[in-house]
Amino acid sequence: MNHYIIAPSASKYLNEIIDYFADFNVTRGESFIAAFQQKCQNLINFPMMGRSKINWLIY
Image (cartoon, rainbow, N blue to C red; front, top):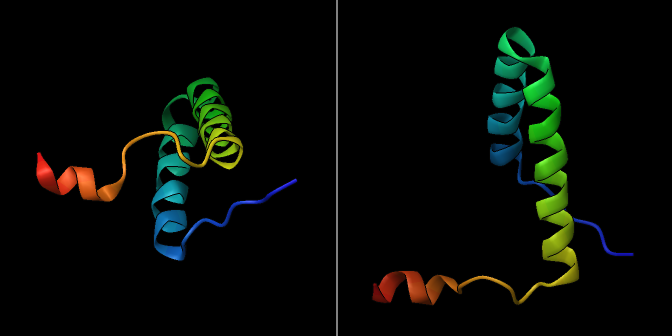
């Protein structure tokens, strides 16, 4: 099983988002975390999905 690592700067933003949800809508926050974890797992399972960064520069 592979693992993913969240960059410290991304972790900071994620913590701010989680804090926001904790204050305003815990249920939505829990679903956000579950969806984020699923997206990360999808990237582990299918690392070539999506567009490469080079494609971003072309458009």
